[in-house]
Length: 354
Image 1 (cartoon, helix red, strand yellow):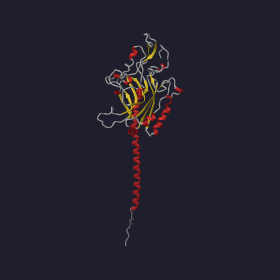
Image 2 (cartoon, rainbow, N blue to C red):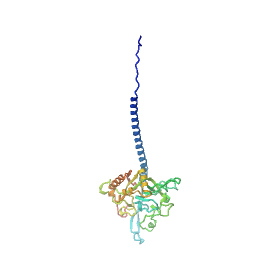
Image 3 (cartoon, rainbow, N blue to C red):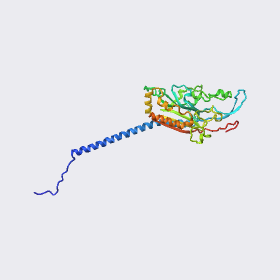
Image 4 (cartoon, rainbow, N blue to C red):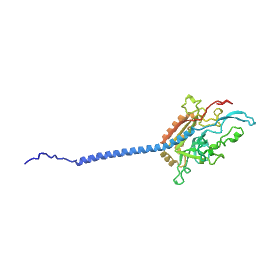
């Protein structure tokens, strides 16, 4: 019998056991990849939500600090009759404009919300008007503070869901034609008396249309407090310009019309602005627990803080620790704003330009 020139090799396939082992390994790898992908998606979603939430706060913070930096005073010297004998007695600095920081609860404007933290009110050439165009240097009154309340007044009428109770950064934004600053104090000026600014920032005068509440607009939600610290750059506490306290506002509050004589009728050169924002998921949980009331966790975290500017750094640490202890995700925004129109001086002499 004759043999073939080439021999044929026999090929063997995979056994059932080998196939089962390979499929098992592949299944484990696919499961690990699925778990890893799920974790990556959750981390990405969490980061996006957090960035998106604090993006609104960042934009609001930038708008607020930019406008504060434009605060102005038209300070000049004038004679006043302090004893009302129809004879001028004193040559002093004065202005028809006003700059003030205060406790938000002392604003006095009509609103149903609960006001917390600090507030700031000032005049600036922001050029906002609903009646006139292209008048970019019109003076506007502007104010910022934090309020806790529902969103019923701000949401569209077709939204029928339950109200959202949140902390909000509010902006007081009347148009130039409703700016009551030039009406406020006019009686005192006409009588050559020291003027009193008590009406313009809560819109209780008669100039223009609209109430205090009508000119309020929310800039951002979940802003739990606002801290405003005016400070000078002439006499710096402890000789350190990085310190946030100063001689002009040791308790945070400043009024250009009533502050001690040598600082009167001026805007401060610098203002430390601090804002604390919460994550939306935390805000939802806090509303579920507290309903229409302020969340006790936030109230207790802020209670007794930011009363003295020389305790600012310690107060920030206490606040952050308290919020962390309650597992409340938050972010602190802080910056030092330079007021470009400030012509700061501590000179007290009469009849001399500064």
